[in-house]
Image (cartoon, rainbow over the protein chains, first blue to last red):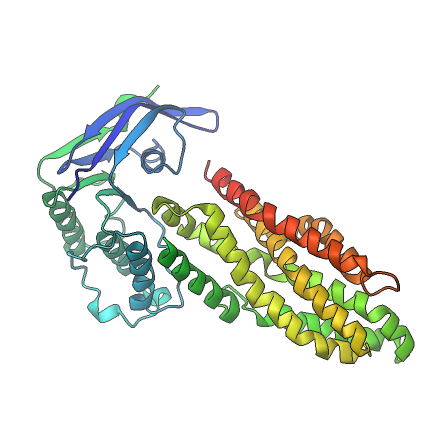
Length: 195
Length: 220
C-alpha cells in the first residue's frame, strides 16, 4: 500500500460574510484518525468539503496523497435500484479508475441486497453509504457525522471499520458531535479556531 | 477511466429512457411532441395545403418545447444526491460527465423525436420531401437542443423555481436552431441545414465547459 497523507495548513473558511474558523492546521500520516468536534454550524461539514477539495478554503491550503473518499449525509445511490445493483454501480466506477478494494467491513446488508434503496430506513441507508465507502479502496476517508441514524450496534461496527481501515495504513477524518470510541484518536475542536 | 465513464453513461441512459421516481423518462417529451402535431389540425382545420405549409414549423416548435420538458431532471437530482461530488472525488472531470450526459439525453429524446416525426408529418400532411428535410434537420438540430438543455439544467440546478427559469433561459438559446431548422423547409432555404448544423455544433462545443463551470461554481 502506497503511503497516504493529508495535511492542512493555516486553513480559514468563509461562508457568506462570516469567517467560520481560521488558523486551522494539522498533519495526518498513515494510521492516524482525526476527530473534528464542535457545535452545529461551526463549520465541520465545510471543513470536510475543503479537505476533499470540493470547497476552496478562504485562506491556506490542503496537501494530500492517496485517493480520498467522502461519506456525508447524502446517499449517492438511485432509489429505484435494488441495493446490490446500486452498490455495484460504484464498484464498477472504482474499478474503472483502478482503485476498487475488497469490502472488508460488514454492515449487515446481505438481507437487504434485493430491496430497492428507497425502501431502506435511515440507518440502513447510512450503512449502505458506509459499505460503499469501505469498498471504494480509497486511502483517506472523510466522514461527516457517520454515526447519525445508526443504532449502538452499527455505530460500533462503523467505528470498528475505521479501526480496520487505520490498521491497513489508512487515514480517517471524522466530523461528529458524538463521542467516538476509537483508540489513539487525535481530537480537534473547531471552537479553538474561532476568529 | 473509460470503464468508469461507460458505467456512468449506461446509468444516465437507463435513467433518462426509463425514468425513475421523480424522473419522467423519455415517454413524456415524446407524447407531448405527438400531441402538438395531433392538436394543431384540430385548431387550424383540415385544410391540407395550409397544414403542409405550416406543418414543418409546428414540428420544430413542438421539438423545441419537448426539449424543455425534461430540463429539471437532467442534472438537479444527481447534484442533490451528491453524485457529482463523488465523481469529482474520483477524479472524473465534470466536462466529460456532461458530455456523457448530453449523449445520453440526445439518445433518450432526439432519437425518439426522429422516430415520431413521420407520424407527426402524416398528421400535418407533409409530403415526402418535407419529411426528409425535417428528419435531416432533427438529426442535425437535436444534438444542439440536447446540449443547450443540459447546460441550462446545470445552470439552474439548485435554484428555487429552477425549472421555470430553465425554460425561459433555454428558449432564446434555441431560437437559432428553430429558425434554421424550420427555415430549411422554405423555398430557397437550402443553406438552412448547414447553418443548423453549425449552430448545433457551436452549442455542443460550448456546453460541456459551460455546464461543468456551473456545477463547480454551485459548490461554493
